[in-house]
Image (cartoon, rainbow, N blue to C red):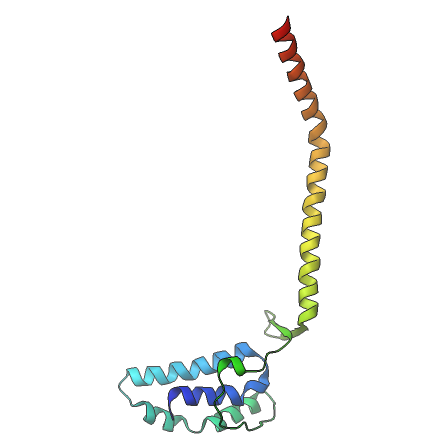
Length: 152
């Protein structure tokens, strides 16, 4: 087994978590662990045999998150084959994970965008309403001045 096969097996077997940041962080942890051990002069196969079966690791990860382990097949699964979640996952400062339906997140984005444009328009109109009359008086005065200066 190679490092890639090991980490992809973990990825496949913890995919049911649904928190792709957690999945990627977990896989990255094991990749870094293996790379660091190899950089210190150990053989990759030795490090992988020390870590053990990636399915057992996945099982313990899922158990720590109070989730049931469902064994996946050993077929090759690339990164793009991880099921896409139609939810937006947001982690609060306290660490709580909030999942919103993607349609709600997109709708909120549109509403915020339209609100921002409306607010900018409202401010611009009010500024023009205050500035426009004195500006027009000034322009008119300037034009009258130029007219009388050039003609008389």
